[in-house]
Image (tube, rainbow, N blue to C red; front, side, top):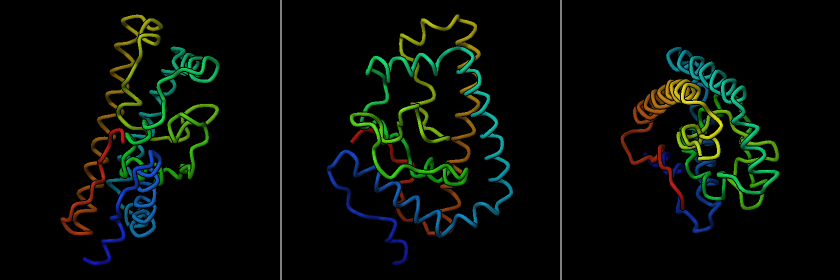
Length: 191
């Protein structure tokens, strides 16, 4: 049980400290258990379905002009929703999922005042938190017809259902492997 203490640490009040702590924990979990998870056929099948769902959602968002509109708002107009603190919606499980997909995890904030995971061209992680996928500001809502919005929310709902299933599965497996101690894999929210 003492070996599991490396996954716990006191959090600093710095706004970047919480995400850095989550990244550290995810990296330790991946180093210790990544091979175990990547050998799990059930998880691999869920990840493949999830990858396809993300790509389908992304394609639809691209075709509907969502990504372009977000780029204009964030980069050209220096507004946007991806503000500092939003990175704390990314859970340890979501970080692990990105590691399973071999997505490079940023180690520092690239764009001051923006989400830790935002780069000059948008989000730098593949698997994204629920809020980042299901939130559409008024600017975007005006872009979509009711039919387009219905299709988009249906497509993203399937993606997020798979994300939930994967997170539950990872949590169950880690609780089995590490014991039933408090491991806040799903902690989210602004700090």
